[in-house]
Image (cartoon, rainbow, N blue to C red; front, side):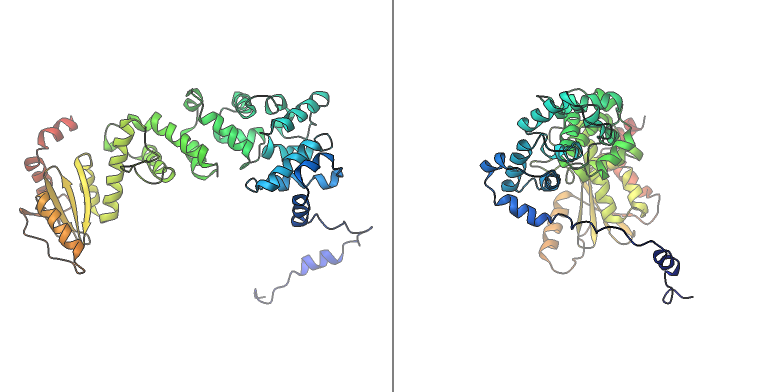
Length: 385
């Protein structure tokens, strides 16, 4: 039987064998748009006197999600405060993560919980930690503290507390951790798991950005050599590039204020990216230039050629074929760059100071020239010791 002629016979047979439903079908679900419009038509001051049945109140957590709709949010909050005693605990468990910051509402629910604590089927943050979650001051910070005491891994904290991702309460709890003055919590975080959390958890930028900055300050500031930028450390730097909108720029940047060691590692990583863009990661010239990464000042492309500046020389090679490496002084190369920028067609490179063989993978002529003529021989020898 072909897929085009196949039919769900077994499924149809099972459906035909089901008994007919008894009783009347359930009423149509609440029309969210209609309920929203109805609520928006009521003046905020009058909501305190409205009597609303419990079935209608279940819509409040749905409407509370619209945090940027100011008129609607004012009414959701006013109605929540007015109906605090009538709301079921299941509705409160869904509503509180969106309006927990409203003191009057939280105080009413706290008073109610003292008389009759949340039921056993409530989420852990409300069932076990309602005193912290509904407290007078800094409820998110209090929740973060009690949560970390039993689940120290930040990436698992929300799941442990059973706080819905993406809610204001979830963001506030995570922010309370990453903005804390102490680094004690950071010392026990699993490195790879935390990077994955930053990358794919969907946490708000107000959580991800300061978290990646704290990890960079703690670990990347220890980098002393480009050879250390591999494996987990390179992964951290590339994640920093992703979360902080690229590598550091002259003006304001997410990298501002980080230790000098981090910014030096950034420079090396940026040069690495530029080499990959110029030659490709599989080209042997990428590996060859990576040996000199510490000393590369600039990488530029002008038409079909790439210039790598080291010290007082610019080494220029065709981007697409490793044929030869021409050496120029920076003024000669800058003049060529300007003329190439003004020209619609590729220009022939100017006469070089010296022409080196660039076709051999070992590139001995290029390496020897850098050692002997760029003043890096002694520095390179000391760095290798």
